[in-house]
Amino acid sequence: MASPFLIVAHRGASALAPENTLASFRRALDMGAKAVELDVHQSRDGELLVIHDENLKRTCGLDALVKDLDASRIRSLDAGSWFGPQFAGERVPTLRETLELLLGRASVHLELKQGSRYYPGIEARAVALLKKMDGMRDSVLSSFDHQALFEVRRVDFSARIGYLLGRASTIRALKDTKDLRAESLHLSLRQTTAARVRSAHEHGLRVLTYTVVSSAQGRRLRSLGVDGVFANDPGLLQDQRHAPL
Ligand code: G3P
Ligand code: MG
Image (cartoon, rainbow, N blue to C red; front, side, top):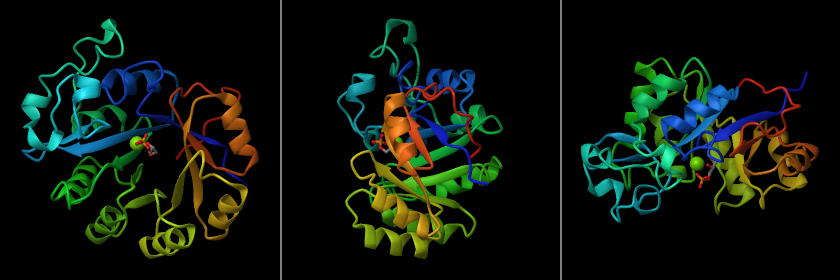
């Protein structure tokens, strides 16, 4: 039997709370999300932090790069006020505290924004943390940086891998996903065509599309054969039963 359509809460319930904060992840869980996506960068002192941009300006108001500051400095910043005054005091979460909240309650799509070329050792750190927290089975590691995915596979035989297409050709992606033993291909809305979905399925890959902001978009993608979506509002398509990852 085909799996039900999967809705992944993109950056948590990021339509309703500041993206990639514990408030956003709690909101997603409260809404019954069974899968949550989050983005990971690495601080100067090697802490894995959950934030989308490499620069802190947009969500924390400081024009500086995550990689140039220690975690303690980054975590002194307010990551919630930009979204609404009721979220003042939200912090950039560590990956560890985010996993503490999510594991056992939802599956995790952990997106490494860059690999070791930019953040030395990030792949091994993420895998080690997931292992320590017994989170490997319920987590998928993904990235636009395909070298990072090959590094994930090198450090762990069993890691679940999702391939973000980015600028790779479909042919390249299908070869990489085979070599990586990836389980899913992640496409943008624009990249999601019936032909590409069919081709991915023929290669044994699930297809997940980002970023969906309306139920109509979700229904259109479902009709194309897509297996699930990353949605800023995990309440979209409420009529659907959410699938486990
Ligand atoms: O993982 C899917 C999606 O999150 C990729 O794009 O920029 O929202 O991280 P972005
Ligand atoms: Mg992401």
